Length: 116
Image 1 (cartoon, helix red, strand yellow):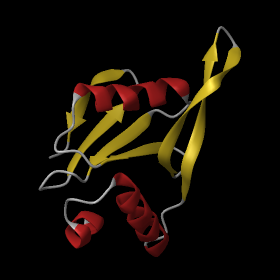
Image 2 (cartoon, rainbow, N blue to C red):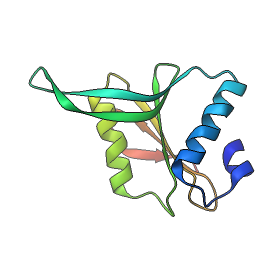
Image 3 (cartoon, helix red, strand yellow):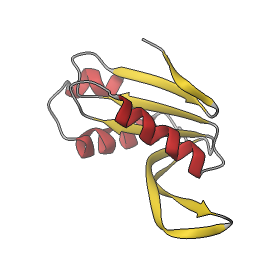
Image 4 (tube, rainbow, N blue to C red):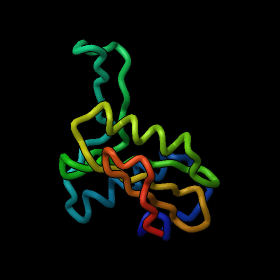
């Protein structure tokens, strides 16, 4: 929320990603940035992979967007990240709306819980 309060709306996703990384460092949240998520097909890794914006605490995927609103396309992307990884929880953060939008996902729960 601090990043959204400071920057407001109108920036590219990359700007929010860099600012959020600085915030994570400031408040000492352990994270990996742009972590590759391998996709397996019948036990074999595919050359194609996903790249999560952040993985925090080795247990939560954090995906950022800078869109006017979140659609099922962005929600599906996060669900696929969970399917491709061993991680069970994710947050989808949208900095493009007037107020910060965020949704929490738990693997196996395909209806994201809104925290607004």
